[in-house]
Length: 490
Ligand code: NAD
Image: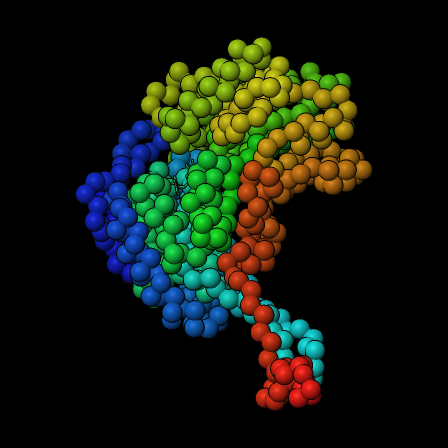
């Protein structure tokens, strides 16, 4: 049985009920967390607000040292963290090992970036003046995190927020809260009390009170579009700083010059990693009509050999989905496409052999078009819809014919095609020949309905600092342009 973590203490707070945490590969209960209440959220705000007074005065060097120490502790608990993450989130161990590396390195990266600078000096109007642009922490930051990358997406908010001098209240997903609790217990015990707080529970019950609280200055959220819209509407009257990372419906264009075997592997990786539950999963695949059959056959032949299974099994390529409702949505999208004339080539159902667990077979489907839900709405599962295009300009139009703008991928050896693609496609990240990679120094985020926030890079730190301009005159004397204006003026 887990707890909350408020003001340096592990506590059940005012919860009278628990939320079970389920292993998605077996549907067994692993553990539970308290179903927090508004009272718990308010206690966390009080703690974070009080801690901010001193935390903001801690030197950037000391904050950096604490963050490095957290990262060293993570290293010491690596295996424990990775196996618990696999148990509660479901994806294969290699993918969780990668998530762990991101967690640790993000803290190290922002530890250094946070002590690098805190603004700039401007050329002043007069020699006796100093003009400073100062970057300041906002205060209390709520980090509201989803279940698909519980640690990575926490780190991308929490690390820059702390480095900038904010205090944080974490609201983990109710589906994957366990690794966050383990992390706080093992790796952040040297931070002053109140600087880091965790409140467990449901979004409506504990996150909404944070969103509307006057003492929570930033809402850093990754999750679905619907929840993002709800948060934006609740926060609007208070003009709060919102940091929103929402959904995606990324397109992947295979150029005519691409090699079919390479295309099949790149597409499978981009569409099926984390069982297709990545915000930047490839959800729409565009193949040149002239070579469609070749590419299609290579994709089917590669995907049919991928092994579906529990993430803990080293031979597994694709793990379970997080839950039944998410799996049902994929099935609905596929059934809807089939009812409109599409054809399932492989998959399109739950596997017969695996029994329990929220598994869904990797699915390749053709005969789709942009009128179908599978090509318009976020599917968030292991589906690969293939659509033909006649020429490259049309492929780009297809990619841009989407309400989301998170990422887009291209496979080509033709630099001119790459140049046109990166200029014309409206998305926050463009991947050419290397889908779904990230770089600590490079900003990650979306355009259009994917939300405009940026994580990672110096942009990721700026999200958690506000800008103040200081105009300082050293000569304490009246200026010639001050009152009075009339005959007595100078
Ligand atoms: P979700 O919106 O259901 O939940 C995300 C978090 O918000 C959870 O902690 C949840 O408890 C909380 N929440 C729920 N209702 C809330 C409310 N009314 N007010 C405040 N908080 C509330 O999303 P999910 O199903 O956990 O995650 C999947 C979604 O996340 C997908 O749409 C995916 O595209 C998106 N995502 C986006 C990115 C990105 O960087 N853009 C990355 C990963 C996932």
